[in-house]
Image (cartoon, protein in one colour):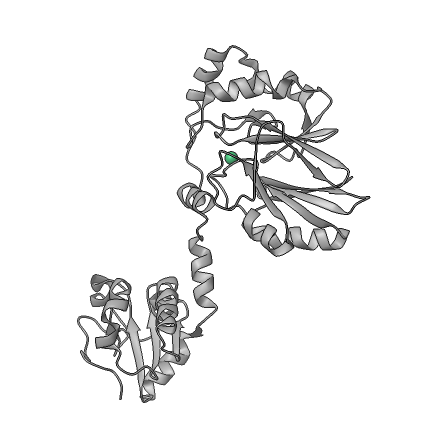
Length: 353
Ligand SMILES: [Fe+2]
């Protein structure tokens, strides 16, 4: 058996491979680490068969769809998972064959309704059902403390105590445990009575994970992260540095249009001299009236960069071929002590000179 545990922050992903048949499965991949999984598979000479999310993650972006697409594998998830990308919808008791290795699916709802644990010969991948010295939380969408109690005490903790436990999160430097160790020392498992367990889970008062709503939107709807949207936009435009733009404005470059896409209050409070104001939200609807020359050099600017990047990419999509965004936005411009103009546009119709 080939085995790799890949930690990204506190999140744990796993690669399990069959040395004989060179087949592999990746469990709980993160979108940010796709290249790491791909390079591990190449290094080991493994063909990726399946990518499995143990549940709908609320704290990070699943890389299952992208990794499977890149490596020609199938995405597997429990049938109750909301992901639109599952090729296989798993049921309790199903087995996946990864070469000579078998992975048995245990439906263990509680942390989420679609949570599964994956049982191999000597180890179990517990997702967020059972963590080292803890359990998954039950206060996020589809969480159910009573169901988690039943999954733990009725299923998982009845397995062989010698089984190694590999969870989806590991903190405090420990990367694995065993069923027996958890029964003996996990403080949450001391609450064997169902009502006491539910009461204990209800009192945890945990803060919401960072990016929770975005992660749920992306992982259940198949959408993109905001970072990905901005990265995609940045890939189809150019950027101009503040100093270079200042020099071109100073030189009265003919045909240069500088477009400030911030909201009106921000524009009035200080903009680059000669900038035109066209808020990002009105860009598509006003573009035919405001930007009449599709061959013009247009530089968009916003406060820090992302909105101008998206605006420039929109203009590029609309057919403006010479668009660029101000790198670092007004924050960088101000930081360099470059000139600022207050109030409304000094060139209400055009800055082409
Ligand atoms: Fe989770």
